[in-house]
Image (cartoon, rainbow, N blue to C red; front, side):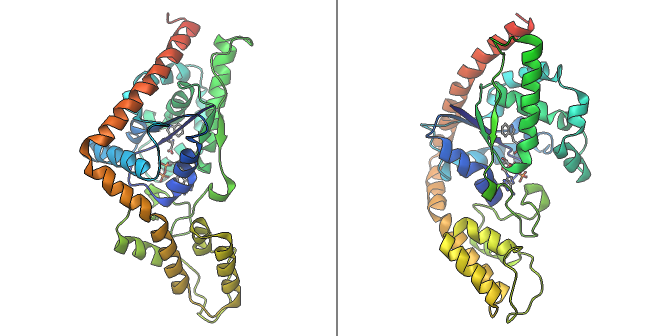
Length: 324
Ligand code: ADP
Ligand code: TRP
């Protein structure tokens, strides 16, 4: 089984990225051949600051390793270290209907939020399809917001197979998304989906003071301390359940219903759990940062492994479409 996923270095990683994509990806690394990359070409659709792009790319690598990515098992690399993927995106674009891209939520959401509607942003799902198909991927662990992109990928692969392949010899495998219901959309401090671009994140490796401040500013209703509270729609409970045991979460729910405890107290409990949860990863991160060449070596090795597969697949694709 080949597993693949990518994450954009468009900012600092948050706990939505961790539970939605990084933890599932790390859990899969021992179940097959895993390829995880830093989607720097994709980040260029929203970030035009070269120093920031370099800095974020490096930190995504460091943070992913600190969270448990094992480079002996999973190949970790930069998307741009496999430039053939842009060639494949071009080929895929020639069979992709405009109308399919016009329906993509992510383009509509991003432009609605003020990201410039560039041709690159519009064709973003085609590059993502190339990312997935160039490694003959079987499984793609992601959060729910990426579901439609995987559907578009399957659609494009089917069109290529129908146009250039045969039933006996399809050009591409059809990949499957892997999305876990419990963590598919982690809420941010405002209760909306946590996202780098909404300013509502709690970062994985934020400073202690800042992290506490973010947790304490989670939006709640204005129920008094004594009043019973609704655990079902509470961002605090939802986030707490990511870090606490089932019994601990059940106890918090019960306490909500009973009343007598203020939201501030629950937020403190959440902060303590969260801070403790990431403690071993913070320590590992310090070790990684102190070894200057470690990350460079990991990325170089990952790029080599990724290129070996991408070269094979591209030879097959070029032959299938008649470029060779
Ligand atoms: P962001 O929305 O913060 O820019 P990305 O688009 O870079 O995050 O997402 C990287 C990965 O993390 C994707 O697989 C995405 O589905 C997942 N992800 C991002 N935010 C969340 C969230 N709030 N809940 C669950 N998964 C998420
Ligand atoms: N679009 C994804 C995101 O914003 C990142 C990404 C790019 C990706 N290429 C991919 C994820 C291929 C999975 C597979 O999160």
